[in-house]
Image (cartoon, rainbow, N blue to C red; front, side):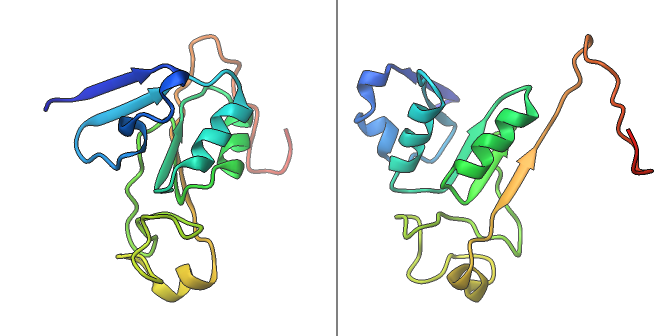
Length: 139
């Protein structure tokens, strides 16, 4: 199977393609009516591996990043596959956990805490105002 995108209507939320852990170049897309619906769908996933959002707004990226229940979060980038010492897997006793520890990373850290990695990628738009931030403590 080559790269495949499945754009499913909300009525197909219970479809196997949405809930099966699929390996390969397959992406299931469900279009939510609002942020609350999108977050409720993400929280229902029993695997809990990763969540991604594509946006031009840092505020929206922050809003979703703080509320996603997944262990790996991508902003403007596909599923971020972490490197040591970050774990590869879910949180909250999701199906992607391997016993009490994940298959990579520091097992004790993952057992006692909720380590998360947020990867972001931003692209300037031609009509965006110049960035006024500096490292001198003033704007």
